[in-house]
Amino acid sequence: MKAKKRHTRESHLECHYKWQARIQEAEDSLQAQHLIIEALVEEKDSLLQTIQGLQEANGAPAPFDDEWEEEPEEDPEEEEIEEIPVGEGEIVDE
Image (tube, rainbow, N blue to C red; front, side, top):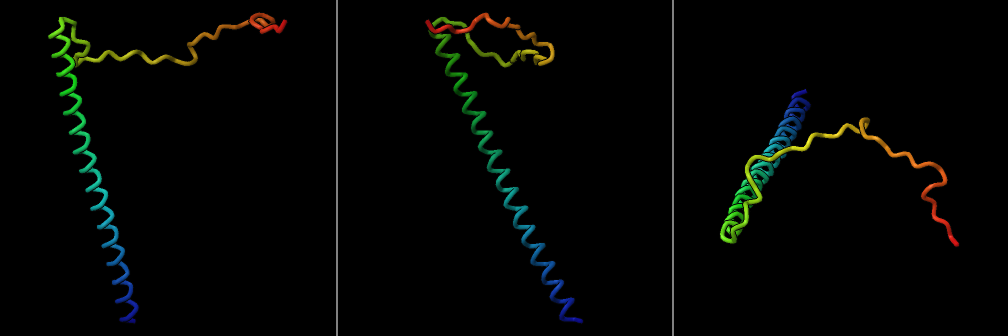
């Protein structure tokens, strides 16, 4: 009986350690992704500043601002589909 309990405990510990390792791996991956995203955001900001600087130097208006206007989403049911009468728009080989 003790051997069975010991085996069960060892099995549970092994499973626990495997899950801990998987959790740590996932956390490391998330941290790496976060660092990549931060670097990309910094690069984007740098590129936008460069573009704005070049446009200002050339007297052109800056194309970007920090306030983005979102277009309203279109409701597919509200879209009108143009009906083409049968016989019109057909290609005729002569």
